Length: 360
Image (spheres, rainbow, N blue to C red):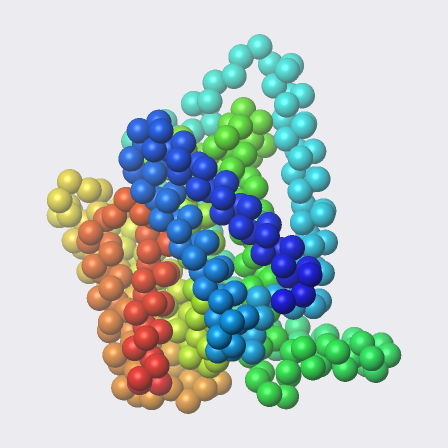
């Protein structure tokens, strides 16, 4: 691992420690749901980074490192630009507060017990960013790679040869896109962490207060936002299972697709036509069934798309989406304290990864 990658890993560990601290605060304040959700996110995040480093640096099961030139340079540039700019936005918010006589935090929250359908739709639309990961893996990533290769023609051989040897482009076409996806999800996670930690630890200075209206009642206080759980879920499975080519990208993309469309369908269908409640929760059996069906259908469609890049057995095209849909349904039915943006992505991909080893 190069020095820049080690520095970036240290920053990610630092954010993970802050998340552990927030978990401690939530337990201290007797916010049980927030504590369970936060501590589980912390563990998944820190363990996935640690396992990645162990697999690559000690057991050498994969020739894919954590993040490699030039993306480590780009990530460092992002950090050096983003953090000062975010601090300036906090400083600006502080100046605004000094000019106001009062501060009413409820002004920036949704006042209803259940989010209006408009806000629920906004929340679900933001999940579509997950599709960008799939496209970057198998479509946009190759375009970016070609751009880099064209640019390298204008550089001295010593630089272009270093670049080509690092990415091993001739050996495995997915290595470049793997680094690209880790970079994109990584900078998103750093941005989300920075903003949400400010919201939790310094709520008065949080410069994005209007975003609070998209949070449900249980997501206020010391509980991290659902976008953090989604980012951790995506990041953890990418750095864990993306190491193993080509099984990793296939499992990652199919499981994220099933989790995405299953969750959107279950929530919106349950909100609009659902009548029979699941226990005392706001979820309905109608939404649950619709979510399972959509997870299965979207999983098959995703695998049919990926079959254009890799040969996927017909058996897995049936078994993978079937098991993934059942796991999604089980998680949705249990309605755990842990945000399903994390559990859906992580558990679906973990189970499908080990199944795919024997079937794909």
